[in-house]
Length: 353
Image (cartoon, rainbow, N blue to C red; front, top):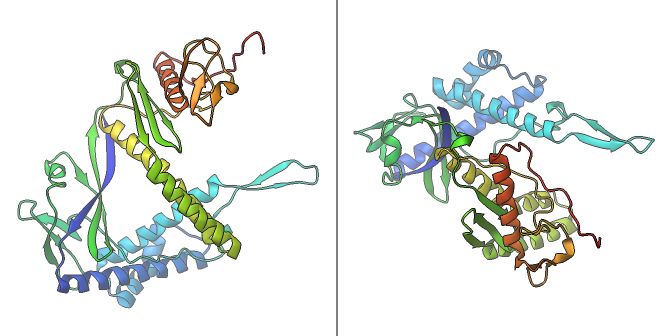
């Protein structure tokens, strides 16, 4: 067995009085996190919980009015953010060319930060059975605030399946979005481990711009998911990025990153859905997948006509070029199932080439 974890978004019904309590708590929690962040930045990024708790606990209680658990949670929230940033810096080392034109790499650490991490959005991390709990047989929520605890109902229909006793609940995040209040709750349960020898169905998925995905399975079934709406949004963000770049603003890169979000989100959804269903998502090399003929195996990029989106091979085989990619990816997955731990295509040409 292995653990399956995902985050669910639970909308809660809030009265005007409770909204005031939540806004005050989440704002104080945000300020507390920035207080902790400044201390970490000023003290050589010491990320030991025991030390931070000893130095900051009383100040967090007095300055921000946080209860005991919230004060401790603000420290853990800030530590987690710094650890995430540390990993991101490590994955993107600084590179430069030396006098001989050779690329050199320097690992980035938190010392590369020019200023402390800043928490912009009001939020509060609440611990199960201390800061929040389900009451009334799972029909209501009891939530802690800076003052009294308060009870509220929530939209239970999409959430009821997680109350069957098989899921464990983690620390939830209380946030507000466009006047509505939500709890983001990580839930975990044990599921059976994926077994390669039990695989009976392999689907190849090709991601692209014209079609968000094209899938193909061993039975020859093909499915196209249009990327037209995503393309429209991508074009919009591209125009915004160009405008920001012309003004020299730092937001240009952020908007560029947003353009890739649908692909990242799709990968995350596929991964946890596969895990939940005792399956696996395998990322394979895309090299030659849109140039290889599924029938004869010849790799020739001129066989693909980008304008008509048609792939035509000298052997007589032809099909949609996006479908060709999905077929070849499906074959790579089948090769992995058969024992090839690093399936990929090598260039195979005709005698004329």
